[in-house]
Image (cartoon, rainbow, N blue to C red; front, side, top):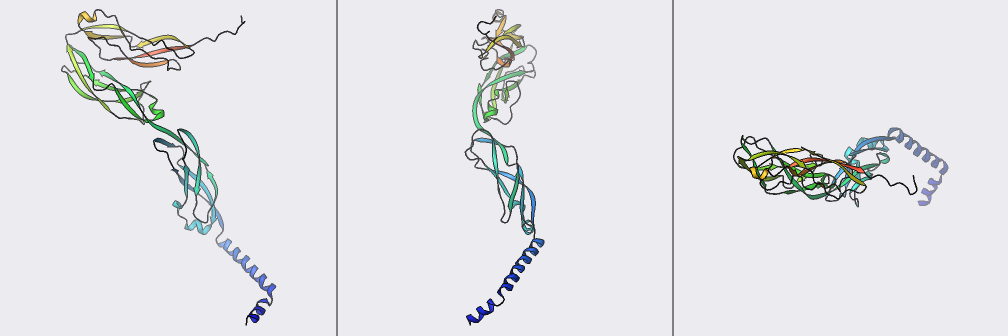
Length: 318
């Protein structure tokens, strides 16, 4: 029986092989005509994997455009969420990075191109730092009254946020409105973190968002206008000499017992540190208020001029 079947199989074998080959070619031709290979594009969101803890992460590109190739039938059946893209942040530290985008495709698809191939990612470490609290008095007390003393529950507060933002902060300020007051009063003063230019710094958080303040008003005190004297730290930044130092306001009104304020012709600022400056600029500083003297606003703006040192002449030059 097997011999007979084998003989039948061997009969006209070349012709049968040719027919089989033709059938396969025709099948591939028909399939290619009916279900050809085509290309298509998808916009895919880029996920971030292995993001380190304790960092603020800023992603420059949120999505990429991928071009893929596959049979038409695969495109018809494919779901958009079957195409994935991700950037792996494992091992990255603070700073700006270009991270390669990796793509995951459904079965049957071939990746042709990814644009862009990398995404910019910035890692900014979350830090904390203590900054001073400055209180600014606005408005005026009732006629004949002035601010005698301001007490606050804290002189500093802690700010938390991305390191690059926290480094910008010079201090936290709060405003005390007098609004015609004639009696002592207490209040909670909201605080705002600001930079050395007096602008609010965003993307940070004060762990204590307000400070308790007690304001004591005084009546019958003598008033006098005196000049403000800037006191500059002798330590200068390398390569600079000190130029002009100007104070705004140059004069302020003080109040106190007549005998006390009669002795005063000026009020010093607290020591102004300039060693951390890289060029001429402005700083906000507190006044060094003598005992028994009342001043509504304790701070002034100081403009410091730094002059580059002249380069030494080469030896032997005329």
